[in-house]
Length: 279
Image 1 (cartoon, helix red, strand yellow):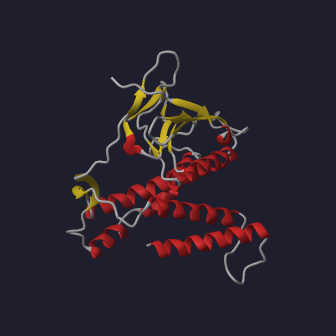
Image 2 (cartoon, rainbow, N blue to C red):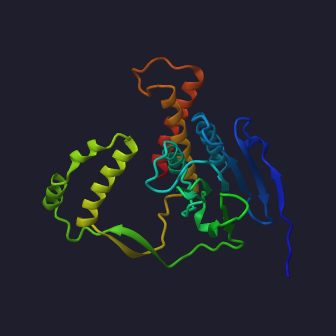
Image 3 (tube, rainbow, N blue to C red):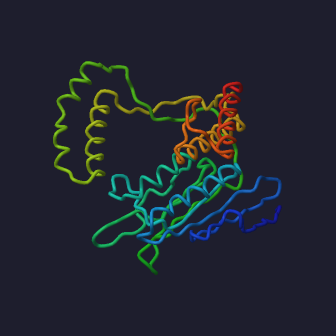
């Protein structure tokens, strides 16, 4: 039986004095290192902590390493839950292609249930299993994920979920949309509840005229989408988001820019040109 040594070190460059967070780099022989991280966000924390968290995720994304993050973020991620912070966390996950694996409530009381302890990764295909384990020592359940020891790229056929437009009738769909009781949205005072009502009404129409179906497709990736292209696209997005934050207009008639902003703008434009050239 073969044995090997795992080496681990704390990544001090990925720490923050404002976050209760720890990131460890794991090195396995003959393999690329990966990161295991944890973050505890106290209840009723100020919103700026999500900005700090996003900055750290951006640093990790630039390293192009596997990330496995677990923690209690005290943000209810149950679909449809009314939580002002859940859209912020979901937005960060969307920007950096992170997947939230926990699907069951992790804190259940006699009055409520919530999903506030989560597992996040940027490589869900390398996860063997994940879940929630009940504990008797507190009101929070244990969340876990198991990384595959040996990863093989699956080939052949995979199953995807898509919509069927085979019998879609544009006029009937628009007619159905017009007949919906959209005025009932005024009965809600909370913006999240208003959005949930609108979304459910609209999805109900779509499901009726273009129902979901499962389809077998070949597991072939586009050959022109290389790792280098993905890194350029992510870096371009990051630069553009930073420029938007400081209200800089990227145009010849825009206001004068400082040296740092000019450098970033040039980098962004070069990334766009290189990306188009690569494709």
